[in-house]
Image 1 (spheres, helix red, strand yellow):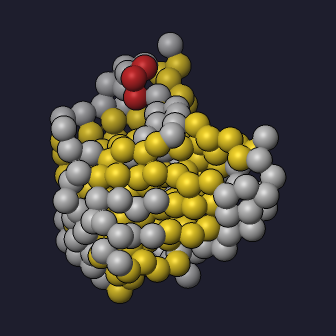
Image 2 (cartoon, rainbow over the protein chains, first blue to last red; image 1 turned 180 degrees about the vertical axis):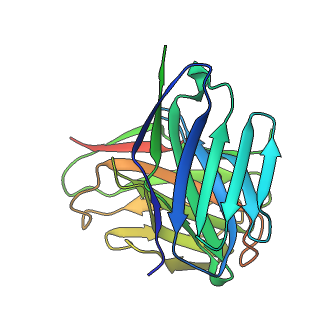
Length: 112
Length: 114
């Protein structure tokens, strides 16, 4: 079945760029999403990209999509302590009603 | 402000007891969802509803029940048949079903066993 994979942990020094990677298996994916979850809270939609786009930039966030390799990345420029959270990659597909498949999340830890 | 409200934030269940988690949205969204989150396992879909008076089972529906009598409300009941209910429960909604719209989440309810 469809799957979304991402590494579980990432440590980055404050001020550096963070790059969180994700791979997915469904070649008919329509939208790909990045969500952020802070401790004890729900998921906050950060950004999303349509599958016919290669890149989307929104302030400190840059999303890159390589559709051929089914690889999605989220780059956070100038990482701050407030960026410490779990980041979920997710994808949806036309053939699946509007059910979204989530990865297991990448915990971003900021080093001083 | 428009959003999704889940209550209570923390809930405790005794053995053999049913408990109901509330989810209300004022976003005028058609579709609503319930997820369960366990550490290291990401989100798993319990039930979803694309329109009022209709709902479908997700991947882990056993031991849970839902209703969708009003567009803005989608309560989840964790029944005594759910033997391992301790988890973080998240409710979400999206504008319209089958349109690949992003889902927006509430702040969650943490359920524990007494």
